[in-house]
Length: 191
Image (cartoon, rainbow, N blue to C red; front, side, top):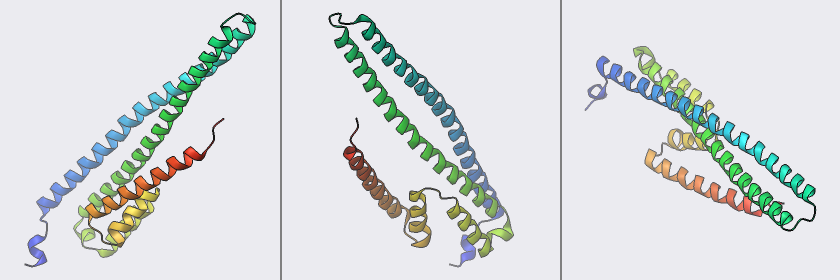
Protein backbone atom coordinates (compact mmCIF):
# COMPACT_ATOMS: atom_id res chain seq x y z
CA UNK A 1 0.00 0.00 0.00
CA UNK A 2 1.36 3.36 -0.93
CA UNK A 3 0.86 6.65 0.87
CA UNK A 4 -1.39 7.77 -2.00
CA UNK A 5 -4.07 5.35 -0.80
CA UNK A 6 -4.24 7.18 2.52
CA UNK A 7 -4.19 10.72 1.10
CA UNK A 8 -7.18 12.84 1.98
CA UNK A 9 -9.23 14.19 -0.86
CA UNK A 10 -10.62 17.72 -1.02
CA UNK A 11 -13.94 16.63 0.52
CA UNK A 12 -12.22 14.87 3.44
CA UNK A 13 -10.02 17.91 4.05
CA UNK A 14 -13.07 20.19 4.07
CA UNK A 15 -14.85 17.88 6.53
CA UNK A 16 -11.75 17.78 8.74
CA UNK A 17 -11.56 21.57 8.74
CA UNK A 18 -15.25 21.84 9.66
CA UNK A 19 -14.76 19.47 12.61
CA UNK A 20 -11.68 21.37 13.75
CA UNK A 21 -13.52 24.69 13.51
CA UNK A 22 -16.48 23.25 15.42
CA UNK A 23 -14.10 22.04 18.14
CA UNK A 24 -12.47 25.47 18.37
CA UNK A 25 -15.87 27.18 18.61
CA UNK A 26 -17.04 24.77 21.32
CA UNK A 27 -13.89 25.32 23.36
CA UNK A 28 -14.07 29.10 23.01
CA UNK A 29 -17.77 29.20 23.98
CA UNK A 30 -17.13 26.91 26.97
CA UNK A 31 -14.31 29.16 28.15
CA UNK A 32 -16.55 32.23 27.81
CA UNK A 33 -19.40 30.60 29.76
CA UNK A 34 -17.01 29.37 32.43
CA UNK A 35 -15.34 32.76 32.73
CA UNK A 36 -18.70 34.46 33.26
CA UNK A 37 -19.69 31.96 35.97
CA UNK A 38 -16.35 32.07 37.74
CA UNK A 39 -16.24 35.87 37.66
CA UNK A 40 -19.67 35.95 39.31
CA UNK A 41 -18.50 33.50 41.97
CA UNK A 42 -15.31 35.47 42.60
CA UNK A 43 -17.35 38.67 43.05
CA UNK A 44 -19.67 36.85 45.46
CA UNK A 45 -16.81 35.46 47.52
CA UNK A 46 -15.08 38.84 47.62
CA UNK A 47 -18.32 40.43 48.84
CA UNK A 48 -18.80 37.74 51.51
CA UNK A 49 -15.19 38.02 52.65
CA UNK A 50 -15.56 41.76 53.17
CA UNK A 51 -18.71 41.20 55.22
CA UNK A 52 -17.07 38.53 57.35
CA UNK A 53 -14.43 41.08 58.33
CA UNK A 54 -17.19 43.55 59.22
CA UNK A 55 -19.01 40.88 61.29
CA UNK A 56 -15.82 40.11 63.21
CA UNK A 57 -15.20 43.81 63.88
CA UNK A 58 -18.82 44.38 64.97
CA UNK A 59 -18.67 41.34 67.23
CA UNK A 60 -15.61 42.73 68.95
CA UNK A 61 -17.23 46.14 69.32
CA UNK A 62 -20.39 44.63 70.86
CA UNK A 63 -18.29 42.57 73.29
CA UNK A 64 -16.33 45.67 74.30
CA UNK A 65 -19.54 47.67 74.80
CA UNK A 66 -21.17 44.92 76.87
CA UNK A 67 -18.26 44.80 79.24
CA UNK A 68 -18.39 41.84 81.61
CA UNK A 69 -21.96 40.80 80.89
CA UNK A 70 -22.21 37.06 81.44
CA UNK A 71 -21.82 34.99 78.28
CA UNK A 72 -21.05 37.91 75.95
CA UNK A 73 -17.37 37.06 75.59
CA UNK A 74 -18.15 33.40 75.11
CA UNK A 75 -20.61 34.19 72.33
CA UNK A 76 -18.23 36.73 70.83
CA UNK A 77 -15.45 34.14 70.73
CA UNK A 78 -17.83 31.65 69.12
CA UNK A 79 -18.87 34.19 66.49
CA UNK A 80 -15.25 35.08 65.72
CA UNK A 81 -14.37 31.38 65.50
CA UNK A 82 -17.28 30.62 63.14
CA UNK A 83 -16.45 33.62 60.96
CA UNK A 84 -12.84 32.43 60.81
CA UNK A 85 -13.94 28.95 59.70
CA UNK A 86 -16.14 30.48 57.02
CA UNK A 87 -13.25 32.65 55.88
CA UNK A 88 -10.99 29.57 55.60
CA UNK A 89 -13.56 27.75 53.46
CA UNK A 90 -13.81 30.78 51.21
CA UNK A 91 -10.03 30.75 50.77
CA UNK A 92 -10.26 27.11 49.69
CA UNK A 93 -12.89 28.09 47.14
CA UNK A 94 -10.65 30.85 45.78
CA UNK A 95 -7.87 28.27 45.34
CA UNK A 96 -10.33 26.08 43.41
CA UNK A 97 -11.05 29.05 41.14
CA UNK A 98 -7.32 29.23 40.40
CA UNK A 99 -7.50 25.65 39.08
CA UNK A 100 -10.30 26.77 36.78
CA UNK A 101 -7.99 29.51 35.51
CA UNK A 102 -5.39 26.87 34.59
CA UNK A 103 -8.08 24.84 32.82
CA UNK A 104 -9.21 27.89 30.91
CA UNK A 105 -5.63 28.65 29.83
CA UNK A 106 -5.10 25.08 28.66
CA UNK A 107 -8.32 25.08 26.65
CA UNK A 108 -7.27 28.39 25.10
CA UNK A 109 -3.98 26.81 24.03
CA UNK A 110 -5.84 23.80 22.58
CA UNK A 111 -8.14 26.15 20.68
CA UNK A 112 -5.14 28.02 19.27
CA UNK A 113 -3.50 24.74 18.21
CA UNK A 114 -6.65 23.46 16.51
CA UNK A 115 -7.10 26.77 14.67
CA UNK A 116 -3.52 26.61 13.43
CA UNK A 117 -3.99 23.01 12.34
CA UNK A 118 -7.17 23.89 10.44
CA UNK A 119 -5.32 26.74 8.74
CA UNK A 120 -2.49 24.49 7.54
CA UNK A 121 -4.77 21.67 6.44
CA UNK A 122 -6.96 24.07 4.46
CA UNK A 123 -4.15 24.99 2.06
CA UNK A 124 -2.85 22.26 -0.20
CA UNK A 125 0.61 23.77 -0.54
CA UNK A 126 1.03 24.38 3.19
CA UNK A 127 -0.10 20.90 4.23
CA UNK A 128 2.73 19.36 2.17
CA UNK A 129 5.42 21.80 3.34
CA UNK A 130 7.53 20.31 6.16
CA UNK A 131 8.75 23.79 7.15
CA UNK A 132 5.11 24.84 7.71
CA UNK A 133 4.61 21.88 10.04
CA UNK A 134 7.81 22.60 11.95
CA UNK A 135 6.84 26.26 12.26
CA UNK A 136 3.38 25.24 13.49
CA UNK A 137 4.81 22.83 16.08
CA UNK A 138 7.21 25.54 17.22
CA UNK A 139 4.30 27.96 17.60
CA UNK A 140 2.35 25.40 19.63
CA UNK A 141 5.39 24.75 21.82
CA UNK A 142 5.91 28.48 22.43
CA UNK A 143 2.27 28.67 23.51
CA UNK A 144 2.84 26.20 26.33
CA UNK A 145 2.93 28.34 29.44
CA UNK A 146 2.47 25.60 32.01
CA UNK A 147 4.97 22.96 33.06
CA UNK A 148 2.56 20.09 32.34
CA UNK A 149 1.89 21.34 28.81
CA UNK A 150 5.60 21.50 28.02
CA UNK A 151 6.18 18.02 29.45
CA UNK A 152 3.26 16.59 27.46
CA UNK A 153 4.60 18.22 24.30
CA UNK A 154 8.01 16.62 24.94
CA UNK A 155 6.52 13.16 25.51
CA UNK A 156 4.37 13.24 22.38
CA UNK A 157 6.42 15.26 19.88
CA UNK A 158 10.01 14.75 21.03
CA UNK A 159 9.82 11.19 22.38
CA UNK A 160 7.05 10.07 19.95
CA UNK A 161 5.26 8.38 22.84
CA UNK A 162 1.75 6.97 22.24
CA UNK A 163 -0.88 9.36 23.57
CA UNK A 164 -2.37 6.94 26.13
CA UNK A 165 1.06 6.30 27.62
CA UNK A 166 1.88 10.02 27.69
CA UNK A 167 -1.42 10.79 29.45
CA UNK A 168 -0.78 8.14 32.11
CA UNK A 169 2.73 9.44 32.75
CA UNK A 170 1.42 13.00 33.09
CA UNK A 171 -1.41 11.92 35.42
CA UNK A 172 1.18 10.24 37.64
CA UNK A 173 3.43 13.30 37.65
CA UNK A 174 0.50 15.59 38.43
CA UNK A 175 -0.65 13.34 41.30
CA UNK A 176 2.89 13.31 42.70
CA UNK A 177 3.15 17.11 42.50
CA UNK A 178 -0.25 17.59 44.13
CA UNK A 179 0.83 15.26 46.96
CA UNK A 180 4.08 17.22 47.38
CA UNK A 181 2.14 20.52 47.51
CA UNK A 182 -0.24 19.10 50.14
CA UNK A 183 2.74 18.01 52.26
CA UNK A 184 4.30 21.46 51.91
CA UNK A 185 1.01 23.10 52.98
CA UNK A 186 0.85 20.86 56.06
CA UNK A 187 4.34 22.02 57.04
CA UNK A 188 3.23 25.67 57.00
CA UNK A 189 2.14 26.82 60.42
CA UNK A 190 -0.86 29.12 60.35
CA UNK A 191 -1.39 31.56 63.20
